Length: 436
Image 1: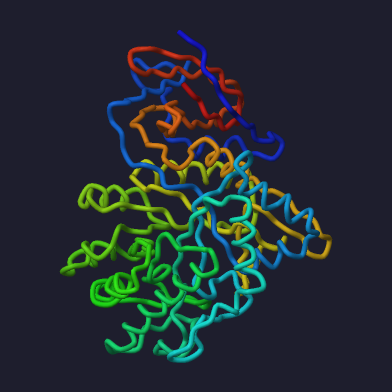
Image 2: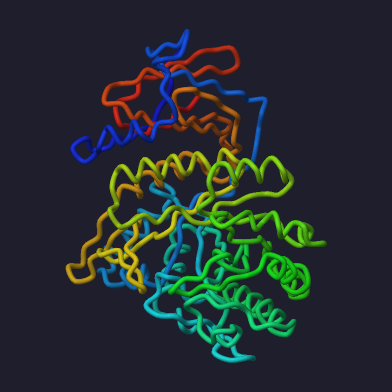
């Protein structure tokens, strides 16, 4: 057996509930015939290569930009480098809202009336935030969706509290033109949009910006208006359908029934989807590429237990074929409250009054993930009965296996690949990337 190179970071044991970690574990081998608890066995199958990873990132929002710019210039630089520089977290495929999301101070869009369009609502916080990130990581790519169309396009004449698009083809043409105008305007800002989506969580009505779509209408907008508008404008931008949650049903299945829909889109953007739905989608529509668009937002506790749950969420989406993973709030004010009073987690918390910043547990998981799975990595089939694992073939030709030891003691890992067995000793409560 040969020893392995590993890169790890351990959880602070005084801040972590070991019993909760074990509850989150996949299974227990103790009562299985012929099982051994002496070592965790992981087998790689390099002949089975799956999706290529487009990137790992997080989401921009105006409240995060506002908090960032409350810091001194030196602290702003420290924060942006910690998030986007190649030798730190190197987040590289990030989401941005089109108009107000729930982490804006109030509702707004880029069109106050028919025929108008301007990005100026975001000139102070959101756009400078994204430009600051791009200045650190020039290769950073963006995907985008609105939380709501402009108020004048909706039945309730407001962006919040749900509502739907006004009936008729004219307004559907207008929403398509609105999104094309957005992509063109962002490109002029030096911020090209790589992937464009029609609506965040198309099945839900909420007190913050939202809009509910019937799946048939949703599909027809892509086929009849949005895809043709993107093509006519000659945008270098992919059209993805989403975002889908699958909490109230598999609306993406209903969309695929519509003639021309599959041909009009590149793939599906998914968030808050359980394993059963991911498996069903992959099984029934293996030809449709998938991307992850938003992580679980939690409740603002920013705990290490939630950081472990984040890793398990990553394994779920990437194992079922998503080519990317997008954490939700990159930066929030220290109270974690949205503009509509919802407290959520973030990678970074900033106290604007005290001019201080802190890196939360989720930051360390995302930094570890992104630094070990660069864009261009290919997921490799791997299996372990004892632990959730992911394996990748990196662009440099090395294999890397991602693993978390939830035990309160060292864990011996045996990695089997190409008829050889490699060993590593993993400290307790430690995230480890095993490279070979």
